[in-house]
Length: 109
Image 1 (cartoon, helix red, strand yellow):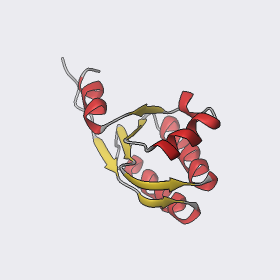
Image 2 (spheres, rainbow, N blue to C red):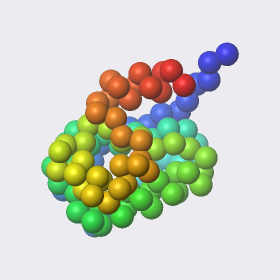
Image 3 (spheres, rainbow, N blue to C red):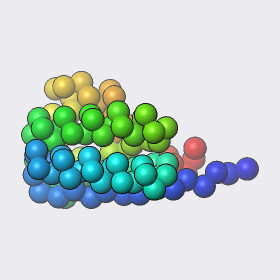
Image 4 (spheres, rainbow, N blue to C red):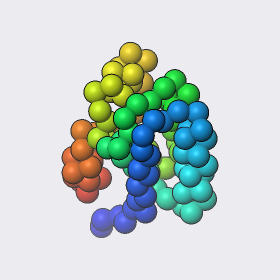
């Protein structure tokens, strides 16, 4: 018996800094209120992320986990990927190279 997940994709763009991190967290909270099971953050259009953007993501991940949902990241550029690696957050977040790779993984759960 296959389960049907309620999946939503968030697509931030440009620089993910303090203001965007706040909007991002509000959007995540709204999705969780709507009983979303899986939240995908597609970084395809994010050019740069600073520490407040990273902090916002960590808070979002905690919020998502507390709600019993899952958070996945995909399509991260090299600069942002380096930030994840330097902070060891690449071990905490599930990061996929593309939306296609992520959709295959979700489809196989």
